[in-house]
Image (cartoon, rainbow over the protein chains, first blue to last red):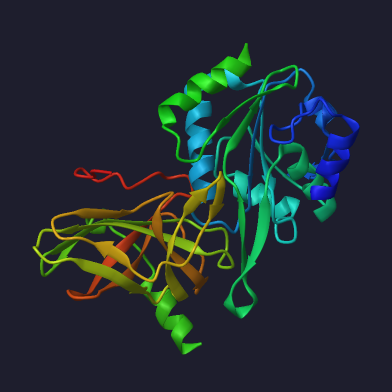
Length: 180
Length: 157
């Protein structure tokens, strides 16, 4: 994961090591919850909202997806062109079928993305997201992961992050700024 | 197996009157216990509740027990440098004269090893174990996966 970031930085010195890449500069290939392949180029000219999480997560992930669902409802049809994606940091357990089950509880505009571990790592590096497996007693494990929601303009430029503990009233205006 | 059957029989569809239950033990008032539906029994469930300590002595929630899960634990969601982790909480302080919420994004009970999937509309009992006040059992309402809290008339969250 770090290797990918270092490679990109070396070859494109103008890019920030901290801010997510523009969507058009990203290089991952993932599969959505319907089994369709998705690449960053598929998101061209669309506003984008992305959250990294996993379906085994009992607190942060359903809370964030509930929030995103409320924001989308408030935005109504204005957000219909927006790409809204949960990218799994736990592809071992999150198959497309599992993600389909999971996202069906939330706003229908939210898609789930998963894929081979190296493609998830590539996506995380492109978004400057960190995640780490934490083993628990009894062979179970959980994942620590970046909890912010990433927003991008239709031209692919990174717009802003909605932090997990940020005042939720600021979220909808932030999203709205990417829709025009 | 016997344990499983017992647990399954304890998870019932709750009549509306059971929702939003309030229980007291000593100076503690415990209310608005809720959980979220799970996809299958493989994923952990979650437990949220509000605790008010009207007394003059500090107390602490030191554990939870439920027939609905083999390994219920207290956790805290911590976001540091933008990264969310979920460390085990040995105890959750309930200071004198204060209220503490186990709520989304903060302290919560994590119900590992569910005996059966939690379905919206069900309820199950959870026993809260306090350091000083002792134990109290209450019914927990299972809400949808995208619920943000119980719809109680007096819900102050």
